[in-house]
Image (cartoon, rainbow, N blue to C red):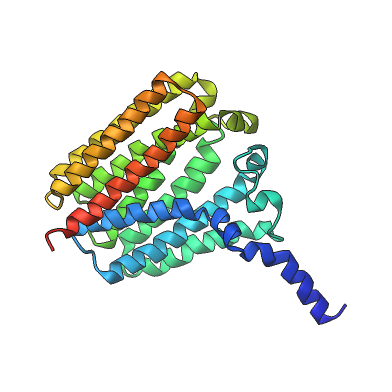
Length: 303
């Protein structure tokens, strides 16, 4: 076999892995983007304004690689469950577009560990929260809680809180009360977001044997529990309005977001069907994005 022929076969084998769609799904880049948004908002809030270009770049690179590496390990560990779920059956490790799946955990661990080790020399707190978020997501949530308990996503939501804390740590302000409240908001927001998704994909989770709350309760009870957590997140969001770095713009947008989130949550309790579950899922995404955007913009207004 000629060298050219071997090269062509290798190219055919690994070509799909390097496609944008494969990379986006394997590393869950949409989720990574939202986590980075939360981290950046934590940095803006902790700094009370512009956190500095260097701090932002370090946060985005280290936090982004850590979140993407964790996501890849998560997909490797859950590839058999993903194959049973209609929503995830197209993922790269399910359809087999990557010829060496056993290397995914090694790649993910390197993406988490190497940047964290480097940044630890400059900012140990930032490295700690990046590593903490990865540990919660991979070990606590994926390996331990998700296969065993209905409360998996409640505790797993702390991974998102770690992203906010990493943003505060990037500017040396992870103990700032506002950063802590924003981290609490993300923690409380996570269940309404994921339980509405699980309610919309209830048959998928049931078929895969994942003990998500909507699989083991009635749809109305699941919607009610999600609404309670959403109410807690909304309360934390409104509490942030008293932070000295925030003003009228944040208060206005937080109030609008709260009305939308709670309104759709109540609607889901009244009619817990698939269409309303998807609506709450997308509304919760919009709510968190609105809060994070308001934090970033409003802290810059005095400038």
